[in-house]
Amino acid sequence: MATSAEARLEELKLTLPAPGRPMARYKMAVRVGNMLYVSGHGPAKITPTTPVTGRCGQDMSVEQGKECARAVGLNILATVRDQLGSLDKVKRVVKALAMVNSTPDFLQHPAVVNGFSDLMAEVFGEDAGVGARSAVGHVALPNNIGVEIECIFEVE
View 1 (spheres, rainbow, N blue to C red):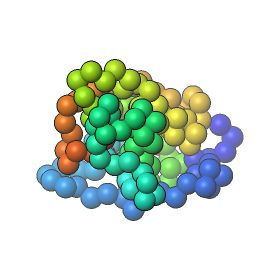
View 2 (view 1 turned 90 degrees about the vertical axis):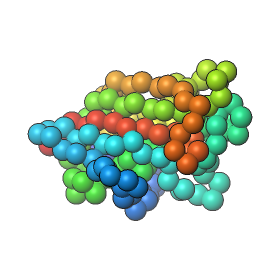
View 3 (view 1 turned 120 degrees about the horizontal axis):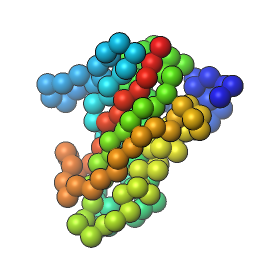
View 4 (view 1 turned 90 degrees about the horizontal axis):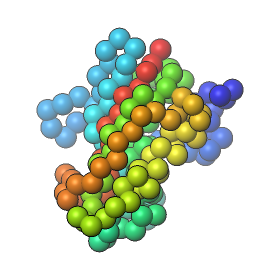
């Protein structure tokens, strides 16, 4: 990808939220060598209509879940920038574990998590922005958030 991740954010007209702070006893991210392990993040309230809470298959449609997952991605990017000083220090997305708050009969978890994956590809490129991924359903997530994602980045 010719354009840097920071420049890409500007091109996409994306503004990152303020980086989150731990809500319990953990770190938002831990760097070990050239790997950054990012704790589970929930969605940022990007616009007044950004879906943040609810269950897919009950309170949220697939499209709303996808928007929620994208909002989680923006929150993660804010943490990564806070930890590294710049998103340009990210070499690639390595792995993401995405948990979707959903009813037991909801089966479209991968489609929801594409909201996160699409954002990473837009910011870091089709190769570096696409890593290994798991998308699973849960009948409850903390504070009834719609999506929680943790991930690993290779960094400079």
